[in-house]
Image 1 (cartoon, one colour):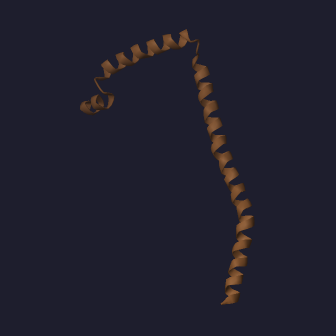
Image 2 (cartoon, rainbow, N blue to C red; image 1 turned 90 degrees about the vertical axis):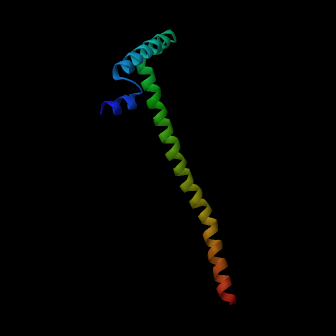
Image 3 (cartoon, helix red, strand yellow; image 1 turned 135 degrees about the vertical axis):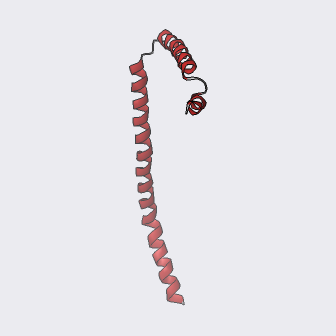
Length: 89
């Protein structure tokens, strides 16, 4: 079991914890220097997910509109062509 955990983490749990703490400290200093706060990152992420959701499903809504618009022309042409073909032969 210990080998699995070490393999999964990429090292011993204590070494990984120390690395994560050091990297977290450095990233925290850098973000503080850029005056970025954690809630700003969460707000940005939630806004991005909301925008992506609207974009994807808004696009699907437009696809349905395009299909219906095209069907208004294609279906009658298809029906007329089928009627003309069956009338000839």
